[in-house]
Image 1 (cartoon, helix red, strand yellow):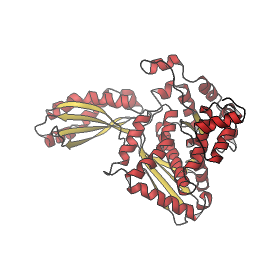
Image 2 (cartoon, one colour):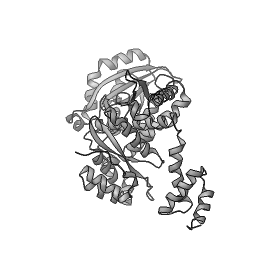
Image 3 (cartoon, rainbow, N blue to C red):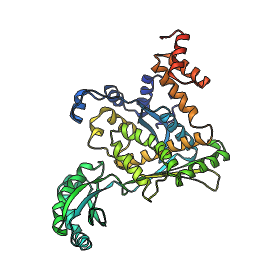
Length: 419
């Protein structure tokens, strides 16, 4: 049985780390996919006006147990300390059984906006009276999705007052199965627009997916045992630190950015749409009218810390870069997920692990200690350090608390490196 506990993993050189991952996953093709990467020819077929490739480091977060399963988590990010923090948070969750997840299923919304209406409330009722005919029209344009168990599953209709006058906005609810769903949902919205116009007597303008995927939620929960995270004082400090993000949007913005450090890194690694996920998460955080934290922390009867998270998660395993990009395909294989719904729940767990690790650092030693240690490596590289000299200079700057390019260059000259 695979274990995501890989002691000393961070000490290995990259090739040996990749070998460990291949061995743990029992999948030799992962190595070939990651080594080959994305070709210029593939990139040229993915987006317009291609001139080259922009590479982002791909790492692996270890120690995750999610719903009883050991999981190795691929993360694509340029920010130091993110992967180490996720691994650390996951390690501290293991004593409590790891992460436990749930979801609402892969349902997305299309919005069809009707304007220039004489009787908006009457129009709303007429749309609802013909909901079965509208969903039938939608499903006729994507019979494959229907055969897979998905398709349009219902309607919501809203009358909205605006500067441009009253509007009737129909929300077509679509079960996207293992796709993110933008193409399918947008095509269905286009297909039903003429019928909406006929029923309302108005004009349809907007017909497009909403990225506030509040019918496609992913949740995760973890119990962080007091003994595993530093005792009752640390539990209390994290609880109080997190409480500010529930009521203060200035703190919530940074709190949620920390969550998205983990979420976005995994979404990107699997070739999914980071912008859609980020837009949905931040809109969901503001759904009450005040921007607030996506996670919550409580202290249970045993004195342990209970962390929970809930956020929209519009991701897929079919279509787009997920199927085209070799590294994204390798990332999905590494995760061992079989559905988009399962992927969404893994992402939620990673977001919670990332959030907990940041809160623990804030509540104890402060966020800068670990972060600046890793930042020092980047500064050493900028100064021209190579090989083992990178670590030597980084450690020296961290111990001196002087992490800047000038000091890195000085040390490089002193220690006999390049100037």
